[in-house]
Amino acid sequence: MTRALFVVSECAPLVKTGGLADVAGALPLALDAEGVAVRVLLPGYRAVLAQFGKSKTVAQYKDLFGSPAKLQSGSIDGLELLILDAPHLYDRDGAIYGDASGIDWPDNPERFAALCKVAALIASEGVDGWTPDIVHGHDWQAGLTPEYMQALNVKAPFVFTIHNIAFHGNADARKLDTLELDPARFTSEHFEFWGKISALKAGLAGACKINTVSQTYAEELLTPDFGIGMDGILRARHADFSGIVNGIDLDAWNPTTDPNISPYKTAAGKSVNKKALCEIFGLRKAKGPLCVLVSRLTEQKGIDLLLEALPALLSRDGQLALLGSGDPKLEIALLEAADQHENLSVKVGYDEALSHKMMAGGDAILVPSRFEPCGLTQLYGLRYGTLPLVALTGGLADTVINASPAAMAAGVATGVQFSPINAQSLANAFARTCDLFDNPKTWKGMQRNAMKHPVGWETSAATYKAMYLAALETHL
Ligand code: ADP
Image (cartoon, rainbow, N blue to C red; front, side, top):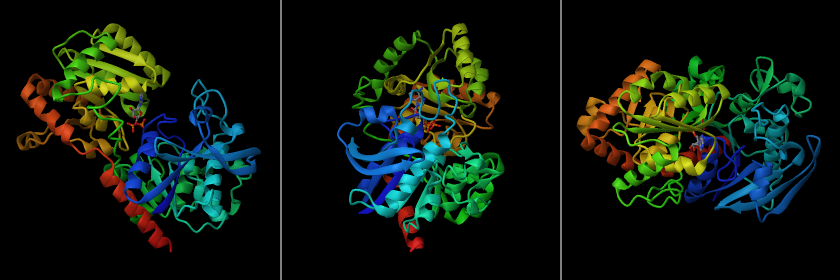
Protein backbone atom coordinates (compact mmCIF):
# COMPACT_ATOMS: atom_id res chain seq x y z
CA MET A 1 0.00 0.00 0.00
CA THR A 2 1.15 3.55 -0.77
CA ARG A 3 0.72 5.79 2.29
CA ALA A 4 -0.66 9.30 1.78
CA LEU A 5 -1.19 12.09 4.31
CA PHE A 6 -4.07 14.46 3.50
CA VAL A 7 -3.63 17.97 4.91
CA VAL A 8 -7.01 19.67 4.91
CA SER A 9 -9.04 22.21 6.87
CA GLU A 10 -12.44 20.50 6.71
CA CYS A 11 -13.66 16.93 6.28
CA ALA A 12 -17.16 15.43 6.13
CA PRO A 13 -18.86 14.17 8.23
CA LEU A 14 -16.98 15.99 11.00
CA VAL A 15 -16.82 19.57 9.77
CA LYS A 16 -18.02 21.09 6.51
CA THR A 17 -18.53 24.48 4.91
CA GLY A 18 -18.42 23.34 1.28
CA GLY A 19 -17.32 20.81 -1.30
CA LEU A 20 -13.77 20.56 0.06
CA ALA A 21 -15.12 18.64 3.07
CA ASP A 22 -17.05 16.22 0.85
CA VAL A 23 -13.90 15.45 -1.12
CA ALA A 24 -11.73 15.05 1.98
CA GLY A 25 -14.30 12.66 3.44
CA ALA A 26 -14.92 10.53 0.35
CA LEU A 27 -11.70 10.42 -1.66
CA PRO A 28 -9.65 8.60 1.05
CA LEU A 29 -12.12 5.70 1.02
CA ALA A 30 -12.02 5.52 -2.78
CA LEU A 31 -8.21 5.65 -2.69
CA ASP A 32 -8.16 2.79 -0.20
CA ALA A 33 -9.81 0.61 -2.84
CA GLU A 34 -6.96 1.60 -5.18
CA GLY A 35 -4.29 0.50 -2.71
CA VAL A 36 -3.56 3.89 -1.13
CA ALA A 37 -3.84 4.13 2.66
CA VAL A 38 -4.79 7.69 3.58
CA ARG A 39 -4.64 9.44 6.94
CA VAL A 40 -6.36 12.81 7.12
CA LEU A 41 -4.72 15.55 9.20
CA LEU A 42 -7.44 17.95 10.37
CA PRO A 43 -7.56 20.87 12.84
CA GLY A 44 -9.13 19.96 16.18
CA TYR A 45 -11.91 22.54 16.08
CA ARG A 46 -14.21 22.36 19.09
CA ALA A 47 -16.96 20.60 17.10
CA VAL A 48 -14.51 18.06 15.70
CA LEU A 49 -13.13 17.06 19.11
CA ALA A 50 -16.67 16.81 20.48
CA GLN A 51 -17.56 14.20 17.85
CA PHE A 52 -14.27 12.38 18.02
CA GLY A 53 -14.89 9.62 20.57
CA LYS A 54 -12.13 7.10 21.16
CA SER A 55 -8.71 8.42 20.27
CA LYS A 56 -5.12 8.16 21.40
CA THR A 57 -2.43 10.79 21.71
CA VAL A 58 0.30 9.99 19.20
CA ALA A 59 2.48 13.14 19.40
CA GLN A 60 2.98 16.16 21.64
CA TYR A 61 4.36 19.56 20.67
CA LYS A 62 5.77 21.77 23.44
CA ASP A 63 5.39 25.01 21.53
CA LEU A 64 3.28 25.15 18.38
CA PHE A 65 3.09 28.85 17.52
CA GLY A 66 2.89 29.95 21.13
CA SER A 67 1.35 27.11 23.15
CA PRO A 68 1.49 23.35 23.55
CA ALA A 69 -0.51 21.05 21.28
CA LYS A 70 -1.00 17.35 20.71
CA LEU A 71 -1.98 15.01 17.93
CA GLN A 72 -4.86 12.57 18.40
CA SER A 73 -5.38 9.55 16.21
CA GLY A 74 -8.64 7.68 15.66
CA SER A 75 -11.16 6.75 13.01
CA ILE A 76 -14.71 7.62 12.08
CA ASP A 77 -16.83 6.00 9.35
CA GLY A 78 -13.75 4.18 8.03
CA LEU A 79 -11.67 7.39 7.79
CA GLU A 80 -8.29 7.33 9.51
CA LEU A 81 -7.83 10.71 11.16
CA LEU A 82 -5.05 12.66 12.82
CA ILE A 83 -6.58 15.55 14.72
CA LEU A 84 -4.40 18.48 15.74
CA ASP A 85 -5.57 19.42 19.23
CA ALA A 86 -4.27 22.98 19.68
CA PRO A 87 -6.81 24.83 21.87
CA HIS A 88 -5.13 28.23 21.44
CA LEU A 89 -5.76 27.96 17.68
CA TYR A 90 -8.97 26.01 17.28
CA ASP A 91 -11.02 25.88 20.48
CA ARG A 92 -13.29 28.91 20.11
CA ASP A 93 -16.88 30.01 19.46
CA GLY A 94 -17.89 30.91 15.93
CA ALA A 95 -17.19 29.29 12.60
CA ILE A 96 -14.05 27.51 11.46
CA TYR A 97 -12.58 30.34 9.38
CA GLY A 98 -14.09 33.31 11.16
CA ASP A 99 -16.29 34.66 13.92
CA ALA A 100 -20.08 34.46 14.03
CA SER A 101 -20.40 37.63 11.93
CA GLY A 102 -18.30 36.10 9.14
CA ILE A 103 -15.07 38.08 9.72
CA ASP A 104 -11.96 35.95 9.22
CA TRP A 105 -10.01 35.13 12.37
CA PRO A 106 -6.98 37.47 12.44
CA ASP A 107 -4.71 34.56 13.37
CA ASN A 108 -5.78 32.38 10.41
CA PRO A 109 -2.20 32.48 9.05
CA GLU A 110 -0.92 30.92 12.31
CA ARG A 111 -3.89 28.54 12.62
CA PHE A 112 -3.25 26.91 9.26
CA ALA A 113 0.54 27.31 9.29
CA ALA A 114 0.42 25.14 12.42
CA LEU A 115 -1.46 22.46 10.49
CA CYS A 116 1.19 22.61 7.74
CA LYS A 117 4.06 22.48 10.20
CA VAL A 118 2.64 19.41 11.91
CA ALA A 119 2.12 17.78 8.48
CA ALA A 120 5.82 18.33 7.76
CA LEU A 121 6.78 16.90 11.17
CA ILE A 122 4.67 13.80 10.51
CA ALA A 123 6.31 13.39 7.10
CA SER A 124 9.73 13.86 8.69
CA GLU A 125 9.50 11.75 11.84
CA GLY A 126 6.44 9.57 11.28
CA VAL A 127 3.73 9.16 13.85
CA ASP A 128 2.55 6.05 15.66
CA GLY A 129 4.89 3.93 13.50
CA TRP A 130 3.40 5.38 10.29
CA THR A 131 5.27 7.62 7.84
CA PRO A 132 3.61 8.85 4.63
CA ASP A 133 5.19 8.18 1.25
CA ILE A 134 3.45 11.26 -0.09
CA VAL A 135 1.86 14.40 1.37
CA HIS A 136 -1.30 15.71 -0.30
CA GLY A 137 -2.36 19.26 0.56
CA HIS A 138 -5.73 20.82 -0.24
CA ASP A 139 -6.23 24.54 -0.87
CA TRP A 140 -4.36 27.44 0.75
CA GLN A 141 -4.80 26.14 4.29
CA ALA A 142 -2.30 23.38 3.39
CA GLY A 143 -0.17 25.57 1.14
CA LEU A 144 2.76 26.23 3.49
CA THR A 145 3.39 22.51 4.01
CA PRO A 146 6.19 22.25 1.40
CA GLU A 147 7.98 25.21 3.03
CA TYR A 148 8.15 23.37 6.37
CA MET A 149 8.97 20.08 4.59
CA GLN A 150 11.86 21.78 2.86
CA ALA A 151 13.12 23.22 6.17
CA LEU A 152 13.06 19.72 7.68
CA ASN A 153 14.64 18.18 4.60
CA VAL A 154 11.73 15.78 4.08
CA LYS A 155 12.19 13.42 1.15
CA ALA A 156 8.51 12.59 0.45
CA PRO A 157 6.90 14.50 -2.43
CA PHE A 158 4.13 17.04 -1.88
CA VAL A 159 1.13 17.20 -4.23
CA PHE A 160 -1.41 20.00 -4.13
CA THR A 161 -5.08 20.20 -5.10
CA ILE A 162 -6.79 23.52 -5.86
CA HIS A 163 -10.45 23.30 -4.88
CA ASN A 164 -11.01 27.04 -5.33
CA ILE A 165 -8.35 29.50 -6.47
CA ALA A 166 -10.32 32.48 -5.15
CA PHE A 167 -8.89 31.99 -1.65
CA HIS A 168 -5.17 32.86 -1.49
CA GLY A 169 -4.48 32.73 2.26
CA ASN A 170 -2.39 35.89 2.20
CA ALA A 171 -0.57 37.13 5.28
CA ASP A 172 1.33 40.30 6.00
CA ALA A 173 5.07 40.03 5.32
CA ARG A 174 5.70 41.03 8.95
CA LYS A 175 4.48 37.53 9.89
CA LEU A 176 7.52 35.83 8.33
CA ASP A 177 9.09 35.37 11.76
CA THR A 178 5.95 34.36 13.61
CA LEU A 179 5.18 31.79 10.94
CA GLU A 180 8.76 30.50 11.14
CA LEU A 181 9.29 30.92 7.41
CA ASP A 182 12.68 31.31 5.77
CA PRO A 183 13.03 35.01 4.78
CA ALA A 184 15.47 33.96 2.01
CA ARG A 185 12.56 32.19 0.31
CA PHE A 186 10.26 35.22 0.44
CA THR A 187 10.69 35.68 -3.31
CA SER A 188 8.39 35.45 -6.30
CA GLU A 189 9.66 31.91 -7.09
CA HIS A 190 8.47 30.66 -3.72
CA PHE A 191 5.74 32.26 -1.62
CA GLU A 192 5.93 36.03 -2.11
CA PHE A 193 2.87 37.42 -3.89
CA TRP A 194 2.72 41.19 -4.43
CA GLY A 195 4.57 41.86 -1.17
CA LYS A 196 2.52 39.42 0.89
CA ILE A 197 3.06 35.87 2.08
CA SER A 198 0.75 33.71 -0.02
CA ALA A 199 0.04 30.24 1.32
CA LEU A 200 -1.62 29.29 -1.96
CA LYS A 201 1.45 30.28 -3.95
CA ALA A 202 3.71 28.37 -1.56
CA GLY A 203 1.66 25.27 -2.34
CA LEU A 204 1.75 25.83 -6.08
CA ALA A 205 5.48 26.54 -6.11
CA GLY A 206 6.42 23.72 -3.75
CA ALA A 207 4.26 20.93 -5.18
CA CYS A 208 5.69 18.19 -7.29
CA LYS A 209 2.29 17.77 -9.01
CA ILE A 210 -0.70 20.11 -8.95
CA ASN A 211 -4.27 19.40 -9.89
CA THR A 212 -7.65 21.02 -9.71
CA VAL A 213 -11.08 19.46 -9.58
CA SER A 214 -12.15 19.44 -13.24
CA GLN A 215 -10.47 19.59 -16.61
CA THR A 216 -12.30 22.71 -17.77
CA TYR A 217 -11.42 24.62 -14.58
CA ALA A 218 -7.78 23.55 -15.09
CA GLU A 219 -7.86 25.13 -18.57
CA GLU A 220 -9.67 28.22 -17.26
CA LEU A 221 -7.09 28.70 -14.50
CA LEU A 222 -4.37 29.27 -17.10
CA THR A 223 -6.14 32.49 -18.14
CA PRO A 224 -5.93 35.81 -16.23
CA ASP A 225 -9.72 36.05 -15.78
CA PHE A 226 -9.97 32.81 -13.83
CA GLY A 227 -6.39 32.47 -12.52
CA ILE A 228 -6.70 35.79 -10.63
CA GLY A 229 -2.98 36.36 -10.28
CA MET A 230 -1.97 32.70 -10.08
CA ASP A 231 -2.32 32.02 -13.84
CA GLY A 232 1.35 32.90 -14.41
CA ILE A 233 2.71 30.35 -11.98
CA LEU A 234 0.22 27.76 -13.25
CA ARG A 235 1.34 28.37 -16.82
CA ALA A 236 4.93 27.95 -15.66
CA ARG A 237 3.95 24.67 -13.93
CA HIS A 238 1.81 23.55 -16.87
CA ALA A 239 3.60 20.21 -17.35
CA ASP A 240 2.77 19.19 -13.77
CA PHE A 241 -0.78 20.56 -13.70
CA SER A 242 -3.95 18.59 -14.47
CA GLY A 243 -7.71 18.44 -13.87
CA ILE A 244 -9.32 15.50 -12.06
CA VAL A 245 -13.07 15.74 -11.70
CA ASN A 246 -14.64 15.18 -8.28
CA GLY A 247 -16.95 12.28 -7.55
CA ILE A 248 -19.55 11.93 -4.81
CA ASP A 249 -20.03 9.44 -2.00
CA LEU A 250 -22.45 6.97 -3.59
CA ASP A 251 -23.52 5.58 -0.22
CA ALA A 252 -24.30 8.92 1.38
CA TRP A 253 -26.13 10.04 -1.78
CA ASN A 254 -28.15 7.00 -2.77
CA PRO A 255 -31.82 7.65 -3.65
CA THR A 256 -32.80 4.05 -2.95
CA THR A 257 -31.41 3.97 0.61
CA ASP A 258 -31.13 7.63 1.73
CA PRO A 259 -32.52 7.80 5.30
CA ASN A 260 -33.40 11.50 4.88
CA ILE A 261 -35.99 10.86 2.15
CA SER A 262 -38.70 8.41 1.07
CA PRO A 263 -36.32 6.05 -0.73
CA TYR A 264 -37.10 5.70 -4.42
CA LYS A 265 -38.68 2.36 -5.31
CA THR A 266 -38.61 3.36 -8.99
CA ALA A 267 -37.71 6.57 -10.82
CA ALA A 268 -41.29 7.62 -10.01
CA GLY A 269 -40.18 7.72 -6.35
CA LYS A 270 -39.64 11.41 -6.93
CA SER A 271 -43.35 12.33 -6.74
CA VAL A 272 -43.80 11.48 -3.05
CA ASN A 273 -40.60 13.36 -2.19
CA LYS A 274 -41.75 16.33 -4.27
CA LYS A 275 -45.00 16.51 -2.33
CA ALA A 276 -43.10 16.37 0.98
CA LEU A 277 -40.68 19.06 -0.17
CA CYS A 278 -43.50 21.39 -1.23
CA GLU A 279 -44.95 21.04 2.26
CA ILE A 280 -41.61 21.87 3.92
CA PHE A 281 -41.22 24.98 1.76
CA GLY A 282 -44.91 25.96 1.83
CA LEU A 283 -45.24 25.69 -1.95
CA ARG A 284 -48.52 24.73 -3.66
CA LYS A 285 -48.83 22.24 -6.55
CA ALA A 286 -47.75 24.00 -9.73
CA LYS A 287 -47.68 23.26 -13.44
CA GLY A 288 -44.04 24.13 -14.08
CA PRO A 289 -40.87 22.48 -12.74
CA LEU A 290 -39.89 22.70 -9.08
CA CYS A 291 -36.30 23.98 -9.15
CA VAL A 292 -34.05 23.68 -6.11
CA LEU A 293 -30.78 25.38 -5.19
CA VAL A 294 -28.45 24.52 -2.27
CA SER A 295 -25.45 26.77 -1.96
CA ARG A 296 -23.20 29.14 -0.15
CA LEU A 297 -24.61 32.56 -1.00
CA THR A 298 -21.74 34.47 -2.56
CA GLU A 299 -21.09 36.42 -5.72
CA GLN A 300 -19.39 33.34 -7.21
CA LYS A 301 -22.64 31.40 -7.10
CA GLY A 302 -24.56 33.81 -9.40
CA ILE A 303 -27.42 34.41 -6.97
CA ASP A 304 -27.87 37.98 -8.27
CA LEU A 305 -28.25 36.60 -11.83
CA LEU A 306 -30.83 34.17 -10.53
CA LEU A 307 -32.90 36.94 -8.94
CA GLU A 308 -32.87 38.88 -12.18
CA ALA A 309 -33.79 35.90 -14.37
CA LEU A 310 -36.39 34.43 -12.01
CA PRO A 311 -39.47 35.95 -13.74
CA ALA A 312 -38.76 33.67 -16.72
CA LEU A 313 -39.35 30.66 -14.44
CA LEU A 314 -42.20 32.08 -12.38
CA SER A 315 -44.11 33.26 -15.47
CA ARG A 316 -44.33 29.61 -16.57
CA ASP A 317 -45.72 28.57 -13.16
CA GLY A 318 -42.31 27.16 -12.27
CA GLN A 319 -41.13 27.20 -8.66
CA LEU A 320 -37.91 27.62 -6.72
CA ALA A 321 -37.03 26.24 -3.28
CA LEU A 322 -33.71 27.64 -2.11
CA LEU A 323 -31.48 26.74 0.86
CA GLY A 324 -28.34 28.71 1.54
CA SER A 325 -26.41 31.05 3.75
CA GLY A 326 -23.60 33.53 3.33
CA ASP A 327 -23.54 37.14 2.19
CA PRO A 328 -26.16 38.98 4.33
CA LYS A 329 -27.09 41.24 1.38
CA LEU A 330 -27.96 38.22 -0.76
CA GLU A 331 -29.83 36.57 2.11
CA ILE A 332 -32.00 39.68 2.53
CA ALA A 333 -32.59 40.10 -1.22
CA LEU A 334 -33.73 36.48 -1.47
CA LEU A 335 -36.03 36.69 1.55
CA GLU A 336 -37.57 39.91 0.17
CA ALA A 337 -38.14 38.31 -3.23
CA ALA A 338 -39.73 35.29 -1.55
CA ASP A 339 -42.19 37.64 0.22
CA GLN A 340 -43.31 38.90 -3.18
CA HIS A 341 -43.64 35.60 -5.07
CA GLU A 342 -45.70 32.66 -3.89
CA ASN A 343 -43.68 30.32 -6.13
CA LEU A 344 -40.37 31.23 -4.49
CA SER A 345 -39.51 29.93 -1.03
CA VAL A 346 -36.20 30.57 0.70
CA LYS A 347 -34.64 29.04 3.80
CA VAL A 348 -31.55 30.76 5.13
CA GLY A 349 -29.30 28.35 6.99
CA TYR A 350 -27.20 25.25 6.66
CA ASP A 351 -29.12 21.95 6.79
CA GLU A 352 -27.55 18.74 5.50
CA ALA A 353 -30.72 16.60 5.89
CA LEU A 354 -32.86 19.18 4.08
CA SER A 355 -30.33 19.30 1.23
CA HIS A 356 -30.97 15.57 0.66
CA LYS A 357 -34.75 16.14 0.68
CA MET A 358 -34.29 18.87 -1.92
CA MET A 359 -32.32 16.59 -4.24
CA ALA A 360 -35.03 13.95 -3.87
CA GLY A 361 -38.02 16.27 -4.29
CA GLY A 362 -36.84 18.75 -6.91
CA ASP A 363 -37.34 18.48 -10.66
CA ALA A 364 -34.26 20.55 -11.51
CA ILE A 365 -31.17 21.67 -9.56
CA LEU A 366 -29.84 25.14 -10.32
CA VAL A 367 -26.14 26.05 -10.35
CA PRO A 368 -25.83 29.48 -12.03
CA SER A 369 -22.22 30.05 -10.86
CA ARG A 370 -19.91 32.63 -12.47
CA PHE A 371 -17.13 30.13 -11.98
CA GLU A 372 -17.29 26.64 -10.50
CA PRO A 373 -14.17 24.50 -9.97
CA CYS A 374 -16.24 21.31 -9.98
CA GLY A 375 -19.56 21.76 -8.18
CA LEU A 376 -21.15 18.90 -6.31
CA THR A 377 -24.86 19.65 -6.16
CA GLN A 378 -25.30 19.01 -9.89
CA LEU A 379 -23.73 15.56 -9.30
CA TYR A 380 -26.20 14.83 -6.47
CA GLY A 381 -28.94 16.06 -8.81
CA LEU A 382 -27.90 13.64 -11.55
CA ARG A 383 -28.00 10.71 -9.13
CA TYR A 384 -31.49 11.66 -7.87
CA GLY A 385 -32.95 12.37 -11.35
CA THR A 386 -33.05 16.11 -10.56
CA LEU A 387 -31.90 17.62 -13.82
CA PRO A 388 -29.08 20.17 -13.57
CA LEU A 389 -29.63 23.65 -15.00
CA VAL A 390 -26.11 25.04 -14.90
CA ALA A 391 -23.75 27.71 -16.19
CA LEU A 392 -21.29 26.51 -18.82
CA THR A 393 -18.11 26.79 -16.77
CA GLY A 394 -15.59 24.63 -14.88
CA GLY A 395 -16.84 21.29 -13.65
CA LEU A 396 -20.41 22.20 -14.64
CA ALA A 397 -19.25 22.06 -18.27
CA ASP A 398 -17.64 18.64 -17.72
CA THR A 399 -20.39 16.80 -15.83
CA VAL A 400 -23.64 17.80 -17.55
CA ILE A 401 -24.70 16.98 -21.12
CA ASN A 402 -26.66 19.94 -22.45
CA ALA A 403 -30.05 19.29 -24.09
CA SER A 404 -28.80 20.54 -27.47
CA PRO A 405 -30.65 19.35 -30.58
CA ALA A 406 -27.79 16.90 -31.27
CA ALA A 407 -27.77 15.49 -27.71
CA MET A 408 -31.57 15.17 -27.76
CA ALA A 409 -31.44 13.38 -31.11
CA ALA A 410 -28.80 11.00 -29.74
CA GLY A 411 -30.85 10.53 -26.54
CA VAL A 412 -27.97 11.40 -24.20
CA ALA A 413 -28.88 14.78 -22.65
CA THR A 414 -28.83 15.06 -18.85
CA GLY A 415 -29.52 18.76 -18.23
CA VAL A 416 -29.46 22.33 -19.51
CA GLN A 417 -26.39 24.57 -19.74
CA PHE A 418 -26.33 28.30 -20.40
CA SER A 419 -23.66 30.61 -21.75
CA PRO A 420 -22.67 33.44 -21.67
CA ILE A 421 -23.11 33.60 -17.93
CA ASN A 422 -25.60 36.46 -17.55
CA ALA A 423 -29.21 36.95 -16.49
CA GLN A 424 -30.64 36.98 -20.03
CA SER A 425 -29.03 33.70 -20.94
CA LEU A 426 -30.20 32.16 -17.63
CA ALA A 427 -33.74 33.40 -18.38
CA ASN A 428 -33.56 31.67 -21.77
CA ALA A 429 -32.39 28.51 -20.03
CA PHE A 430 -35.40 28.67 -17.69
CA ALA A 431 -37.66 28.85 -20.76
CA ARG A 432 -35.89 25.85 -22.36
CA THR A 433 -36.18 23.89 -19.11
CA CYS A 434 -39.92 24.63 -18.89
CA ASP A 435 -40.37 23.51 -22.51
CA LEU A 436 -38.60 20.23 -21.78
CA PHE A 437 -40.62 19.76 -18.57
CA ASP A 438 -43.88 20.31 -20.47
CA ASN A 439 -43.14 17.11 -22.37
CA PRO A 440 -43.16 14.34 -19.72
CA LYS A 441 -41.74 11.72 -22.07
CA THR A 442 -38.73 13.90 -22.91
CA TRP A 443 -38.20 14.83 -19.27
CA LYS A 444 -38.37 11.21 -18.09
CA GLY A 445 -35.87 10.19 -20.77
CA MET A 446 -33.45 12.83 -19.54
CA GLN A 447 -33.99 11.71 -15.93
CA ARG A 448 -33.09 8.17 -16.91
CA ASN A 449 -29.91 9.39 -18.61
CA ALA A 450 -29.03 11.49 -15.57
CA MET A 451 -29.49 8.65 -13.11
CA LYS A 452 -27.23 6.41 -15.21
CA HIS A 453 -24.49 9.03 -15.52
CA PRO A 454 -21.40 7.86 -13.56
CA VAL A 455 -20.79 10.22 -10.62
CA GLY A 456 -18.74 8.01 -8.28
CA TRP A 457 -15.07 8.30 -7.39
CA GLU A 458 -13.66 5.15 -9.06
CA THR A 459 -12.13 6.70 -12.18
CA SER A 460 -10.91 9.83 -10.43
CA ALA A 461 -9.43 7.91 -7.48
CA ALA A 462 -7.42 5.83 -9.97
CA THR A 463 -6.25 9.08 -11.60
CA TYR A 464 -5.18 10.50 -8.20
CA LYS A 465 -3.23 7.31 -7.57
CA ALA A 466 -1.53 7.67 -10.95
CA MET A 467 -0.63 11.27 -9.99
CA TYR A 468 0.89 10.03 -6.71
CA LEU A 469 2.93 7.39 -8.53
CA ALA A 470 4.16 9.95 -11.06
CA ALA A 471 5.13 12.27 -8.18
CA LEU A 472 7.00 9.47 -6.41
CA GLU A 473 8.82 8.57 -9.63
CA THR A 474 9.94 12.10 -10.50
CA HIS A 475 10.93 12.73 -6.89
CA LEU A 476 13.36 9.80 -6.64
P1 ADP B 1 -18.51 25.03 -2.74
O1 ADP B 1 -17.46 24.07 -2.28
O2 ADP B 1 -18.00 26.12 -3.62
O3 ADP B 1 -19.34 25.56 -1.62
P2 ADP B 1 -19.72 22.67 -4.00
O4 ADP B 1 -20.91 22.53 -4.89
O5 ADP B 1 -18.44 22.05 -4.47
O6 ADP B 1 -19.53 24.22 -3.69
O7 ADP B 1 -20.04 22.01 -2.59
C1 ADP B 1 -20.99 22.53 -1.72
C2 ADP B 1 -21.36 21.47 -0.71
O8 ADP B 1 -21.94 22.11 0.43
C3 ADP B 1 -22.41 20.52 -1.23
O9 ADP B 1 -22.26 19.27 -0.56
C4 ADP B 1 -23.71 21.20 -0.79
O10 ADP B 1 -24.78 20.30 -0.70
C5 ADP B 1 -23.31 21.74 0.55
N1 ADP B 1 -24.06 22.93 0.98
C6 ADP B 1 -23.84 24.22 0.59
N2 ADP B 1 -24.69 25.04 1.23
C7 ADP B 1 -25.48 24.27 2.01
C8 ADP B 1 -26.56 24.52 2.92
N3 ADP B 1 -26.99 25.76 3.13
N4 ADP B 1 -27.11 23.48 3.56
C9 ADP B 1 -26.67 22.21 3.35
N5 ADP B 1 -25.66 21.90 2.52
C10 ADP B 1 -25.06 22.91 1.86
